[in-house]
Length: 162
View 1 (tube, rainbow, N blue to C red):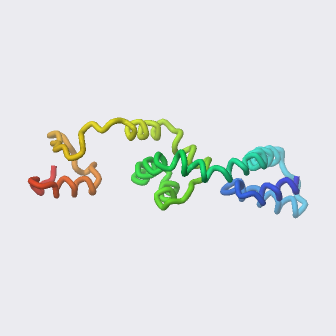
View 2 (view 1 turned 60 degrees about the vertical axis):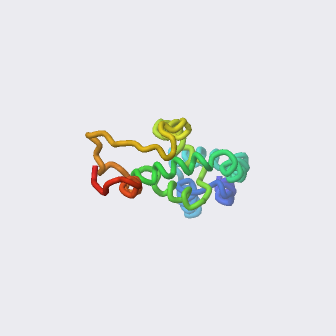
View 3 (view 1 turned 60 degrees about the horizontal axis):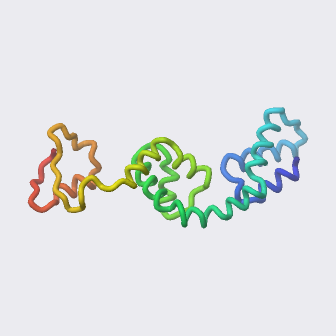
């Protein structure tokens, strides 16, 4: 088992919590300690996640991400950057970094992300340059400040709060 752990640690696919756990287990084994059945079960799952086939998929992920996912990832990153969820991952994507496959999958495969992407893919409700008026019950405190600045600087608009 010790050699299998060392092999998994040598692969770039092994990162985050998996890497830390395997390093801890390797240290315990090196000190001659016995592993519990739960530890052995967890190590087995981690070794399966970090095998050679997953390493190949990991190496190809960067190319696949740029080709197939980068536009949607940027859309989701801009959405999640304003929420409390996936904030670090969003920052990485906006900075131009390729995210980890598992983290990106969690971010993009949930029901909220699917709604965001569906809305993003839809034809815009209004054409660019159209003038729209807010409802009487519109609350400007929920509007992003960049949109508020745009509305207030629109030619012919008054600089008033909604």
